[in-house]
Image 1 (cartoon, rainbow, N blue to C red):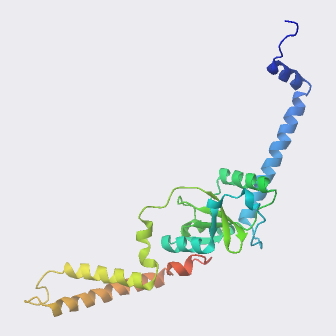
Image 2 (spheres, rainbow, N blue to C red):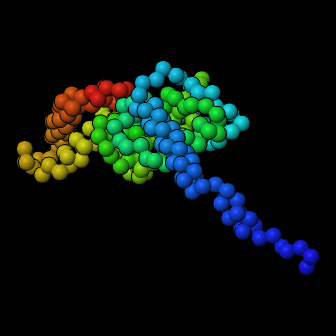
Length: 238
């Protein structure tokens, strides 16, 4: 052959020799340092105060299945007894992959994201837990963009377990049900020789008052409230 074929790998190595090893290491170090400063800045924004209520995203680059209205978020929080609060109240750990997603999103949209909010169980705003938080950023007009989710999924029975706390009607129905079942376990003839519907109703009324008293005491003592009242409250005893 008149001309020798070009080996790209050899040419690449020749090009590499034009740069000193120290220069390459220095440039890589500066790049990593810049990335670390960027991540540190994002963490400060998540844990700090912000007055921004919307971010100037490029809507052509947003994933529509990650856009949620405040009413949709509120419904989920009420059904599963979750809170939707500013990220500064979050006491759990923000995963590194979430920080990386924020960084990539900022680079993609050429902007700095602020006003982070998190959906999570109340405990996560007080101490570390393993339930799944959702990180949102405000878009405007009551819409939020879901950036990331981490941790484990919620317990499959959580919605049923927190159903009594949804409103006063649900809680009353639960108290009635518990009272009725407890009354059924009272032995026949315990209070009189003959069983009658009146006796059953008296025992049931007594059980209802007892269970209701325990529920009311528990609610006041621990500062509990119904889901619609706490979903966006920053106070522990809301």
